[in-house]
Length: 279
Image 1 (cartoon, rainbow, N blue to C red):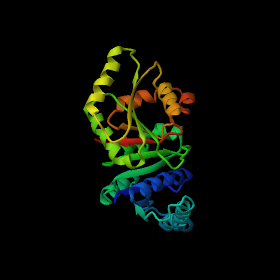
Image 2: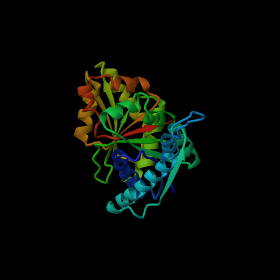
Image 3: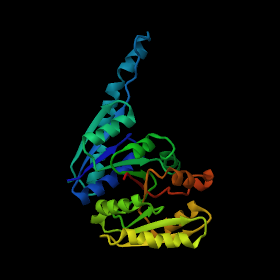
């Protein structure tokens, strides 16, 4: 049985991502462990008025009560979507958020972390130092970041993988087939050619030979474009891609991907979950 770790900040975005976790758990016959991390306020020897001291002293209880109240919402979501049979357990932990999530993932031997983001702005921040970004970068297992605006129809029919033709990309594609083979999706291997050179297309042909036969149907596409963001956005919309996957080590690719105006940023992947792989 596979294990999914689901960090939650008790927000609507997190609840939305929980539906993805349920769907994956159902297909994998996996269990889900939800985790909410809070930080205890350190007041030390500072003298505080009685009412304020009592407020700080009640923070632990508030975190517990707030999380306890959120659990029925997750249970109801599972019931509404027909996944009440999925095994779900809950954890409330005190500590630094990122470190606690990563430690829990190791302790639980998680095969996947699923977490929610707040949309296009939140998705950009994933790669630029947010809590979610630290989890994506440092987790030992794959991490699926689900934007709040992602529309989930209960199936994963199309997965895109952004490649730069490295040896690690071959291993990443094979990892994708292991994770999502039960969904039987169409896998799209994509590279954006900003240099407009024929050798780039030849590289894709060579890369296809490296990948060889895999269990999923796979296509290889070079997008000749001057605007990487627009090219990928158009491709994802045309192919109705459910998840875009990439290796987290490609920081230069990610930085280039997000080097656009705020207006354009709002359109980029606002509705597409991102899977971070670690090879």
